[in-house]
Amino acid sequence: MSSVQATVKEWVPGTGGSAFLDDGTVLVLPAECLQDSAFRFLRLGQRVRLELTDGLVVAVALPT
Image 1 (cartoon, one colour):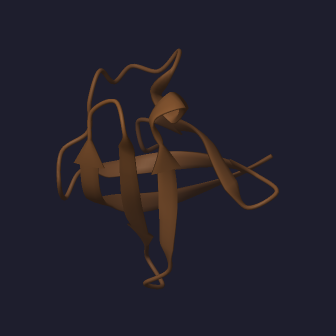
Image 2 (cartoon, helix red, strand yellow):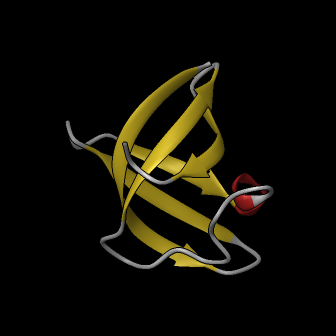
């Protein structure tokens, strides 16, 4: 598992969304990535830390 920081591009509760990495790459944020997190929802422009497994987002956390 690896960790990267990103900025939320879009978020639809129950559906998911996407986020920009600092290099401009867009990653898909599945709705289930918020399970067991401090977030109930995400907002546009919010900075987050993404936990990745095999290039897929599996969790979202507060940036460190």
